[in-house]
Image 1 (spheres, one colour):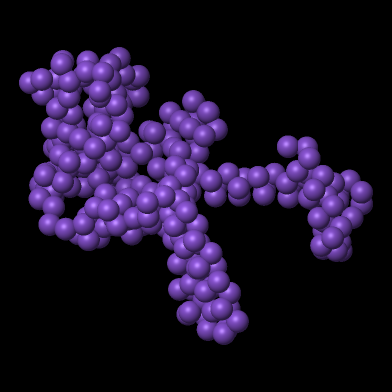
Image 2: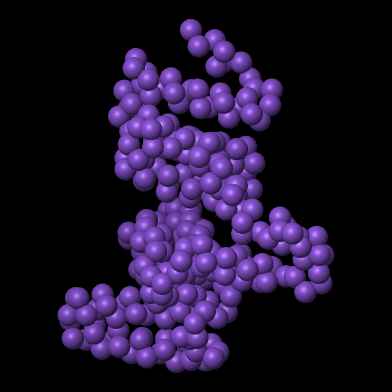
Length: 276
């Protein structure tokens, strides 16, 4: 039964058709109860998690794992397409065609009537292309206001990434400091206000001022052209590596971290930093 699905694909088209067919079987009567129970809503968390796992595979430079994780993302797309197709809403073809049309429309420097001249022009840069993309996007979306653009940025994005995108929207219409010095001054101001809120002991006020401080830090990272998510993740990874050294060194000397003083652990922490 389903013998044709066990045969390796010979072309990319066959590979996609095979995956689509597998999902159809799993969603059909007599298929898998879990797959049949899924909805667009129930799959949302999985989509987010799979995307992060793709990023981790890229960072680890693990090609085999990257194949697997990209496959999991594709599975999510095909599953959503199958769910919609069963309701007569849209299909995988609709998704692909819509995306192809959008990419063609937003790349007039490649697909437009003056494509060859534009693509070969010395003045065309990555920044030029990004500006062109944003301008075309605004026309397509019939932009009504910058606020509306900000509100369309998904709330489920990582908080640092979302705040950075909001700040960029504001900067595009001139609501920004001239240079990073203004952002640094704001950082000092928000730090002082957080300390004041802490002294007052008002939890809600502390939360608000902490958010302002994080927003100010994101502004600085934007001016310095450093991805705040990447910077924080790198810092966290360094912390884990150094802590691993502290824990291993303590274990080697026959000590438990729980029985050590903070100054004792700090000595090992500084040793860990020298070995990086």
